[in-house]
Length: 131
Image: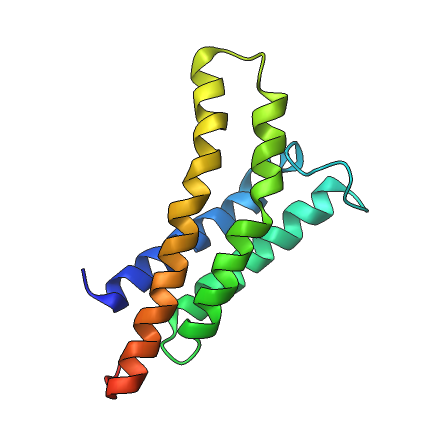
C-alpha cells in the first residue's frame, strides 16, 4: 500500500469516528472518565471535532506529518476511555467483554499506524516526492 493511500485510510477512519461522536453520542458519553471536568457530552463533542480535524490534516499532504503525530497522541490520550469501558463492561456478556477488552490492545497498532504515516511523510519530504 502506498504511503498516501495509508494516510487517506487513516483519515477515513478518523472522519468516521468523528462523525459517529455526533450521530450516536451516548455511547461515547458513557466512556468519558468521571475524573474529567465538565460534562461527558462536551468531551464527546470535543473529541469528535478533534477527530474530524485530524482527518482533514491527514488527508492533506502539507499537514500530514504534523497531523499524523497529533493522531498518535490522540490515540494514546483516549486510552483511559477504553480502560473505563473495559472496566464498566466487565459484567456484561462474553461478546461485549471481548469487544471492550479488544479495544485496549487495538490502541497500539493505531498509534503505530499514525506514527508510520508521519514517518512516511518525512521520508517523502526528504526525497522530494509530491502528493
